[in-house]
Amino acid sequence: MSDVRYTEGIKSCINCGTCTAICPAAEVYKYEPRSIANLVQTRDETIIEDLLKSDTIWYCGECMSCKTRCQRNNAPGLIIQALRTLSIEKGYFIHSEKGRQQLALKRMIGDSILETGYCVHFDNTPHDMFPESGPIWQWVQNNRQSILEKIGQNLYKNGDGPNRKISKGNLEELRKIFEVTGGIDWFKKIEEQSTKKANDMVMNRGNQSDIDSQYFKDIYTHNDQEKHNR
Figure 1 (cartoon, rainbow, N blue to C red):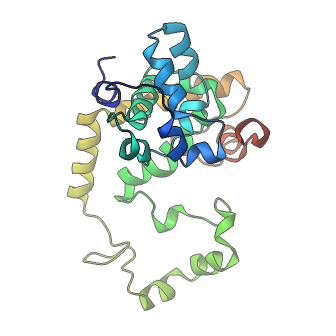
Figure 2 (spheres, rainbow, N blue to C red; figure 1 turned 90 degrees about the vertical axis):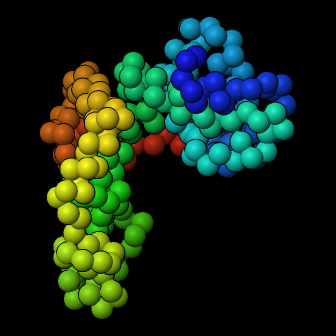
């Protein structure tokens, strides 16, 4: 309740449902921002713990459409952010399918930021991990140097331009930001709790950057459409 995102997210909710009506995630998932606001206001720890262990809090895209439409200035999207933080800190995220996928985000985006300076780097988008990119993307990957130079990319090089090499000093500054803001601790908790879950599921978790391990592939590819779709 002391999280600033909670205190800013709930002003005087009357449970009107406007947030659910505008929510893009509610169009495709069994998800209602209104219900989230209602549940956290109960302050019932059992109910909130169940919420932290559920898939529900991971459906939100954090687009904040709810904030723009609420006549009372509530923001269920901020409440979701607070719940997600708590779920990771308590280790509850491993109890849900979508929660376990936080490991994929950590290893594919979080680690990429720290290692390359980019959320999504060219080298971290292999066709086998992103089959929706189509066969042409594999051809681009195989011929990266000649193709990217023609379209003004600066892959692996110093200077300006997309995919340029980020200096060591800037990478160190990025890591310091993650350390000061608690991001590194978050990453450690995600890895630690994922290890426990992988052991429970009798799966190999791999090292902290491994995207080929049995556990990683399971969380990356498994999606229970019957459970999640409306």
